Image 1: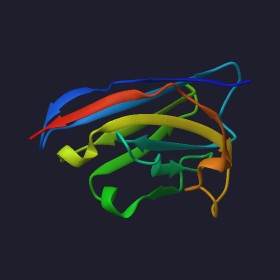
Image 2: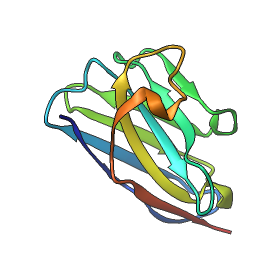
Image 3: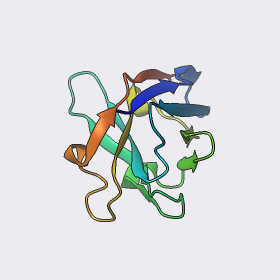
Image 4: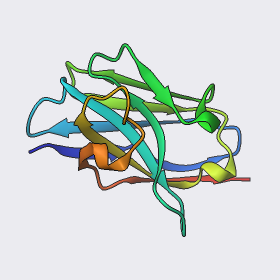
Length: 125
């Protein structure tokens, strides 16, 4: 089993930055694809970004490209999401996920077997 714990969320003004972390425990996630999803009130959980097992390939939802950066440190069993130029519409609970590495289904929630509890990000205007 893999346990995922997110941290780094909080309240930030529009245009600001936050760095989310996702620490894995229970087993190494170095062979897993990892991803961030988010869920705003009243909306479906949506894909944000994903990274392959080595960290060499990353994927982003279009509206996050150029603003968000996903990275991983397999030695620390940790995945990060650097969020810059934040907008009020980025307000959501952000979830970390781990699953079978895939270059095709990385954006699909069902691809991921393990999920964290989420961390709240609130962007004020």
